[in-house]
Amino acid sequence: MIRAFLVLMLVVSTAHATVWGQGVSGELHWKEQLTLEDYTLTLADFSMEEKLMVLVELQDDGRPIARRALHAGEWFVINDSLRISALKIAEEDDKDEPYAIVRMQLPSAPEISLILSFDKDLYRGGEDIKMPLSVENRGAVDAEDLRIIVDSNPPIFSRRINMSILQAGSAWDDRKKTAEIDPIRFDLVAPYLLEAGDLQVKVHAQYTDPDGNAHQSWGGGKAHISGPLRLFKRVEEAQELSESYYVINSLSNYGNRTFSVDLSDSTGKEFHSNETLQWKIVLEPGQTKIVSYCIKPIEPAMGISLPDAVASFRMGERIYTIHSNRPVVDVTGPLIDAKRSISPKRVKAGEEAVISLELENRGNRKAVLTMAETVPQGAELISGELNESFMLSPGEKAARKIRLRVIDPDGISIPSSMVRYRDVRGNDYSTRTSALRVTVEEEEVNSPSNASRNDTGGSGMSKLSDPQDSREDDPSPDRENRDDERLIPRSIDNRVVESGSGLGQRISILLIIIILLLSVALGRYL
Image (cartoon, rainbow, N blue to C red; front, side, top):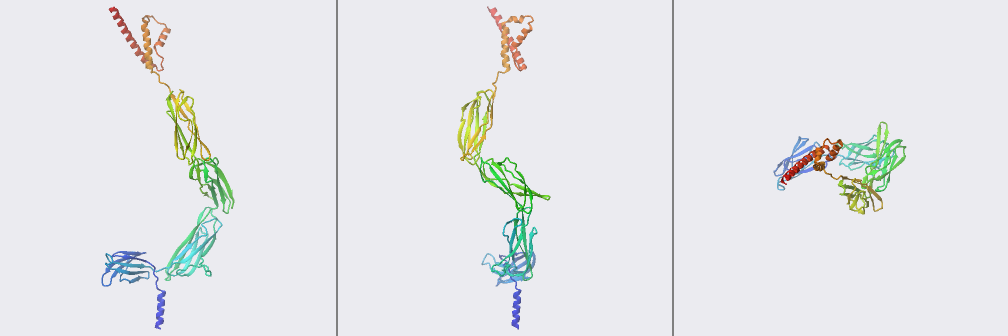
């Protein structure tokens, strides 16, 4: 009878024995702490008697709940929810100061793993979606009263699953008669969406441990559902600068209704097109339509990304927009940048002017250039090459100078010239230089004051050679006019003429007086 009672007590105690988790452990010195969730353990003191002991203090969220003295190998439990163990207590001989290795453990709990997967990442409206769900208890104790809830967003799918118990370390087997473990399988149809979006599926598990404590786990996944329209843009990936190419836009309707679509496209700054890149398309379910246009590269470059084409349609009060892919293109070829200038731009007749020509290959292929300059009418060549052919590698520069003598007093005009070049494949290119103009300045002339001084001096000498003119009575008007014309120099500025004439007259009178005095003195001497 006693033996039966002991066996019964052993069974009961085993059934209610707590399974402790791995927990945390650490080496603590005096006043150091160890933390597990909301619990904090402090090593308050050491006892250095015959058998070493440690004094530990336990707090729950800052509130003291226990104080115990432990020998090495001893432990204590608080409310079946926390276990404190002293694994080792070391004296000062081991280190500079004594220390203890302690461990904190929480009861083991069931741990349900929920793994939901999809057979594809992308679905179109109307396609089948297959979702296997793996359920596994990775905890150290059984999970009881297991309930699994599966919901989706948008809300097109929902499931509820119940299981009484899932043992520790085991997985849910949907087909127990097979050799392999089969997950739970869900099948549904992808919805028709007006724009691309994600189908999110959430899995929530609720369960208890053998002590009746509640637990829960989360899982889920998502798949991408495409919209009803698909727009794909394609073009030749390797292009020559001298050629033109077609861009092709394919628009497909994978939905379950007819759409009236506005389609537009653009070339970007690296390409040019003479066409209007806008179309209006009506697409029925399952239909595909193609539009194309021609583009020509403007300059060479590698890795050019073309802009995406854009399709839009209206449904109710809302406009839905679809963008295409962005093709990447490599454009090869030479590109010559030619700059021409002349200096100086104003010269005198017979002086020199220099034409400067700067050339640079901004492309990614070698180019052979052919230049043809001309000497304009009214100028003559002093030095420089008018016709020349040479090669420029990518990034290479060249400079040329032509010296001219300007002869034409009206100046010279140099028309725009053509610089032709070709690449190794025989493709021909050309670019133009700017037109130039040189103006000729007029020669400087004597100032009006000097001319007046010379003319006035001449008229004074005329009066001196004919002294009788001063004694003539009342000269005729014609004579006065002739005298005026002879004495007054012709000048545009009358004020300058008058100023110069007055000075000349004073000098002439002074000379006459000197000559008369010299004549009188000479007569008396003789």
